[in-house]
Amino acid sequence: MTDQERQMIEALAKRIQDAPAPQIDRDADDLIRRAIGARPDALYILTGSDSGDGADSGQSADRRAEAARPGGGSRFIELSWIELG
Image 1 (cartoon, helix red, strand yellow):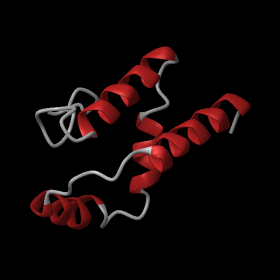
Image 2 (cartoon, rainbow, N blue to C red):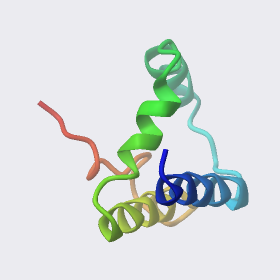
Image 3 (cartoon, rainbow, N blue to C red):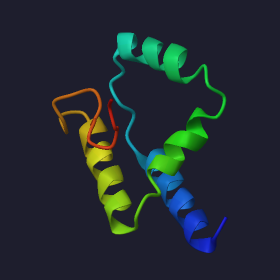
Image 4 (cartoon, rainbow, N blue to C red):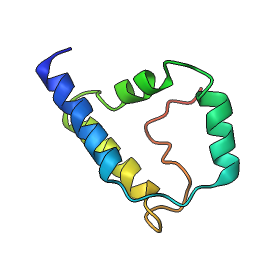
């Protein structure tokens, strides 16, 4: 791990720690725990998805954080960073 990668992970962890508690959709929470939580390396994979190519990764994280705030987004999850297909 490089110093830059360490800083990015620490910054992501800080944003998560400082984020207000979201209003939890129980159906979504259950699905997340079953479908994503079943994979032991899910946090590693998701953290890596935020460390893409420099400035864009920070902007993506900011968009996801904004969507996660109560009243900040109209959907449960911001899908722009997920490649479907």
